[in-house]
Image (cartoon, rainbow, N blue to C red; front, side, top):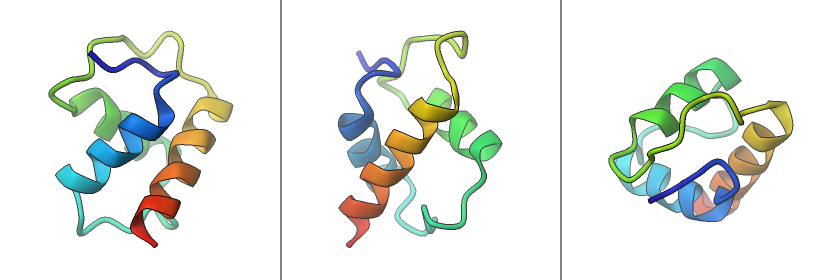
Length: 65
């Protein structure tokens, strides 16, 4: 089970699930939806803020490189 604080694990899952998406260009609305659509993600959007999404995005960029 993934939750919002698992930014590295989420980034790895996003890279595996959506390798064709460039994390440098995705907006936070779309990023939030991609995270919530992950199979292992079971937390709602209530604990999701800009800082959380930034952390996920930065980890995803690092995973892509």
